[in-house]
Image (cartoon, rainbow, N blue to C red; front, side, top):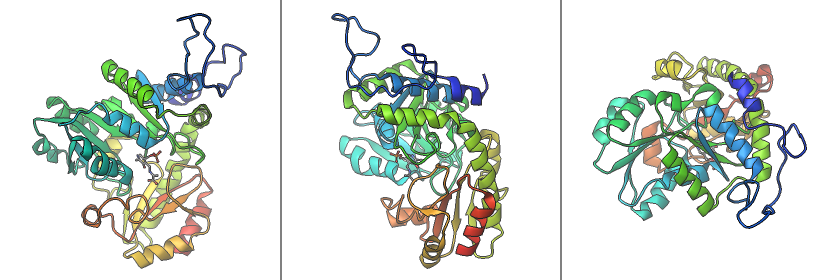
Length: 376
Ligand code: P1T
């Protein structure tokens, strides 16, 4: 079955009770039981809800995973995945991740005896020396938010597995339409479904997809025990979103490439970060590992003042956090999405005060380009 077919049909069987073609929003907290221990597979809605189950089957199928779990946010999905770790474990964390992921390690997990080191995994040769006897996990984003560096997932997985460590990949920026990390050896895929999977900027959610039965059992146990579940209504919205993932991603990719090329030639732009450009340092890896480059582009304006001018001059692009919706969103990572990353770390990553990030939407390309042109 092709990707677009799976996106529409996986988990989306007509409702057994009524034949409804769209999976209903089962807005209920509990389910009537016929007798003690006799039920229709559902008991209490934190544990399992049919709308959530449908979404879990859908996204797991898109990632090529046996198991999937939907959470209340991307951060809840990441937090629940990190509960595979125990006090005393060490994690190799990609040096550029969403600011909230760094903050979770830096400010919360560090209180529970979980150590981490930041490593630039875009050069796989940096990985080997970073392993310690207690390294249990390598956690990467690719492409990274917001400087768009790419990590070779097959190379990193091979090294990590030789050390007995799991590899977790945050696949939010490309979605399974353009990149399926499990096919490259990754053990666990996490998502903020808030972004491309839902695609319409009207829901916050997260997802974990994996094949290992024992780890899946634990993540399911954490989902039920800690309870950061996705609601039935949000499950419905994301399930509706994934039905159009293939067509939306094609449109984001087409506009993303055009915006990146436009910016690369613009006299007011000093540098463009987009793996689809031949000048991107990991362009060859991206071409091999991804089937598209997507709609995320960041660029260097040269100073905070210049960035402010651009951000206050756009008319079509909306100034705001988040990404992956049909509308173009623009933001200032240093003060918004990555404010929790210390200034010296941001500088080392090229996450400067002059950096602007665009989530290129699927509006008419002429309108997006003329908005950026007048703002620059
Ligand atoms: O916002 P939430 O659904 O909890 O997802 C967190 C998250 C996880 N991973 C990546 C790669 C992300 O980009 C995010 C959220 N990012 C933004 C809100 C942003 O504007 O970058």
